[in-house]
Image (cartoon, rainbow, N blue to C red; front, side):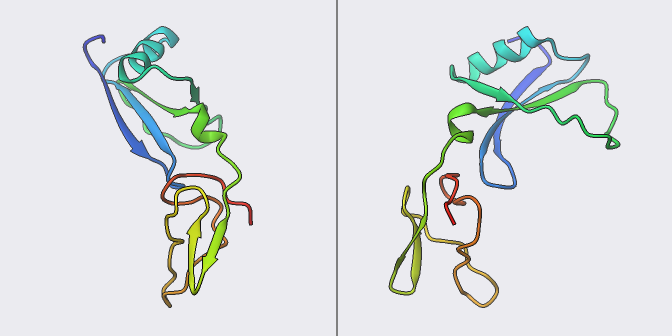
Length: 119
């Protein structure tokens, strides 16, 4: 990988894994993004472009986030009730709790595996 380019993984607000690539100076080329992603792990990634009219921080470098396409296409899970508990039908993770310690089963995604929940 070229000098000045760093990669790390993280999770977005919905708990979906993403690959973060940062360049300390200059703007990315598509070839640099592809090379960095391949070095992290060969897979099929989606580059999300935020084309919004929002103010953004101006820096000397560049930053992109890539999502595994397979993670974005996960669908078909649902919350399964066992007694008073709710579990994800895909991974078995428990549904999140509200302030009253009741399970929130109206969430769009499982916070454990990222599968889209059929509500």
